[in-house]
Amino acid sequence: MTPRLDFGPKPRLGYAAPGLDRAAERRADAAALAALASDPASRFYLIGEAVVLKKTAAGHDPLFDPAQAKHFADPVDALFLGLSEGAARFALPLNAATLAPLKAEPHIDLVDLRSIAVRGLLDGSHLAALAAGRALINWHSRHRFCGNCGAATRVTEGGWRRDCPSCQALHFPRTDPVVIMLAVAGERCVLGRSHRFQSGMWSCLAGFVEPGETIEDAVRRETREEAGIACGRVAYFASQPWPFPTSLMIGCHAEASSRELTVDKTELDDARWFERGEVALMLAGRHPQGLTAPTPMAIAHHILRAWVDHEIGFD
Image (cartoon, rainbow, N blue to C red; front, top):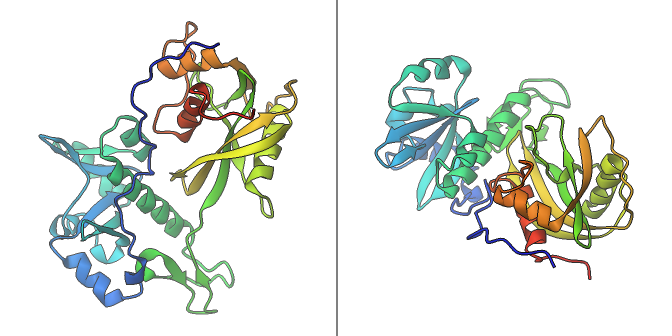
């Protein structure tokens, strides 16, 4: 029996905390949204390649009031994210030229969204709103022209739609579904190493869901393609918004029905079987060879921990 390590309280999944009421029923009222954008109670997240954070005695504050936001960009370009405790929340896109002078400001930090989550700089409710804002801003930057006729589109619905004035096509933000899975067989599981991982880090396998494919079939296909392992039963675990740039990570566990690995070296640097106890040491940061697992902000950490803690199985 694998000894159980004490990992302490379960951490919160990054970018997935509640707290933002999306208030979709308000998106169609342009006049009301304009009024909210100038309401002193409303707050703006300033987002470019980095997020603008104010340094305070209590830590970091990502929220700017309308008067402060106007110093950086025109609030008319802000995207309506929803309501928090009755007050409006907007994402205001910033370009590189606007961000550049802020690097010298002593009371401002420019931090990328991934680092904010890894370093725990903000409360989880901010992470969820920032993830939505970052994903929306990315989508708008890539969909300024109609994919149907090529004409320039205009922003509507508070940023949740782009309309084509030429052919009347309506364009909505897209989310790309990605399966991320742990193939298990008794006391062992399959982990892989991406070419871009830091030295010693191993994680779950992952891949995009293809058109006309179920989540379960995507799990089986990606595990077979990347590691050569066939899988039978698939169990859904949890999901996580992943704004890099606009994905939804769909976490699963899968029952491996074969054992011999055939690694796709184009997709992975390597893949191999790990014992449950070894994964526990990786999660705890105590592996004798310095091997590591993803941090708690990533769903892969939670998928691994659930298996190590015997919370899932295929008995």
